[in-house]
Length: 114
Image (tube, rainbow, N blue to C red; front, side):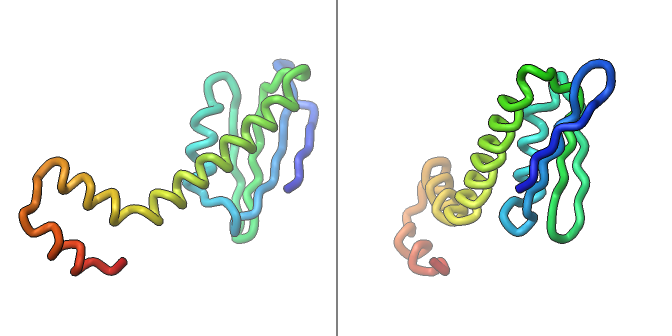
């Protein structure tokens, strides 16, 4: 993972971060960017092996904080996505039982590919 700081426009600095596309999904990256787009301009550049995130208008005195928060949030979002995939079937069973109790729940569970 590469981080870089460049001179941005008159409003602040530009933070460049590079992430491996084999580790992080584009969905996790988009979710994270959405959390940070309140007062910063964010651009994502992709290719098959990496993502480059450019965040503009970062004030000079909080660049390290923005970088740290972004990376932590990205990891959190990726873990959420992985967990959603891993436990999708279980979650659907719980919701089905909660909203429409099934008399044949044992039969449904036995027919699942778990």
